[in-house]
Image 1 (cartoon, rainbow, N blue to C red):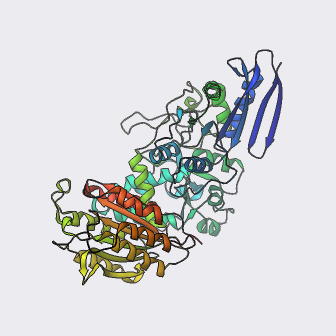
Image 2 (tube, rainbow, N blue to C red):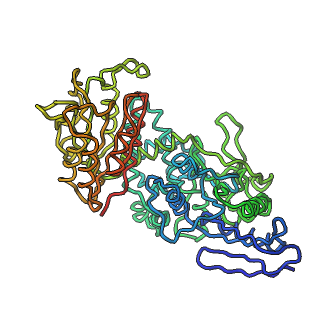
Length: 579
């Protein structure tokens, strides 16, 4: 019989083989798993080791840590020299695991999109938990639960125009259930046609008023008393996982939560099993051996006891399905309905190791960019190129000029920003205001008092047909202007839109621009410079030489018709505001 030492400290579970007739040496395997699934993984690892875990004749030592996905994502991002919106930097004690089991494949998707060198293997789902709208049961009853089916369109209408719901969300840049809600609401808003942006913006602003940085803080805002006044003043709807609702109700609160499953089904949590790049062959072999242990009916039963389903959506022994829960993965709308929780269908079926799925990367990026643009307080100077080349026609935009598609994107962006923003507007070309290449159309000021003036200024912008691109003089002047009025507690940024390279023969040189910017940069008063290059006439190297000094980033689209999405990405690049 193999001897075993078990150590449990905080969220860490360590199993080491001390002796065993069938193996020698040791292969250490470090696994970081989302906190809700970590106990099931560590129990499976313990049973595996007790049964003589080995690879290629070597004993396996498994360390399982319950780690929030955002913390591992921060460590991976730091290793690859990238940043993810809302994620921040890893702590100095962060350790890279061999295997990562986050709650959602969207973490892998976001990281691989930003860092092409990040290419984990396996990536199959080992568990499943639908994302639901959690409501105190008295509130859910008023919406017809459990007999009536809620749709995301119903919920969008309640969020934007109703007065009954006090909604909440965990910051979707850091929480997978929050991201799922964001994508579902975005899908419902897109059906509003011409009113899609207004509906989406209204929903995000409403959700932002009830946002939390941590899931436990959000959950703590549900009613703690059955008193009607307490119910009315508490949180009445939030996006959580099915597992969150099961765990909440298991504590026997004064008022239980109902899990509503709006249609069409939203993105679920799929718990991918990711073997991280750089894992040596012996550990990678141990990782695959452990995965086979998690691809069993026994593991599905361990999941069931923790309120989680198997990767095929069915559930194992001990799973307490919420009323209205259906077994299986979401089906297309035309598919036959699935059995409900009252049937026994959930407890049967092979667990499977279904490949972990995920939404379109562009949809995730767009949703998070929009959220950041709407919810992050900022002080921004928009600087728009009005040189003659902006009169060129864009075939993919119905023949509109570059200037027209740029102004349309700016106007849509302005509609996203709430009155907490401070925004100013400059235009630039060459000799636009006497001998100066730039002109202030509106000073940086609160949108609460100058939104209409900014819109009027945008509508009045026309290119200078004979104008060239006075890029360097304008960047330097814009940076100096924003530094003079720098405000704490906000993201201070310059966002420049241009379709050309610097071609001002009378302006400063690139060398002088970079030297002057380097002298101005103050880490205590950071200013992000975000440059959006439009068309094929820009030089990415020229633009990146600027942002490498100031901070910020460069976005280039050869198709000006895509500037709307690029503009949102640029806004989302901004870091959290310093204190």
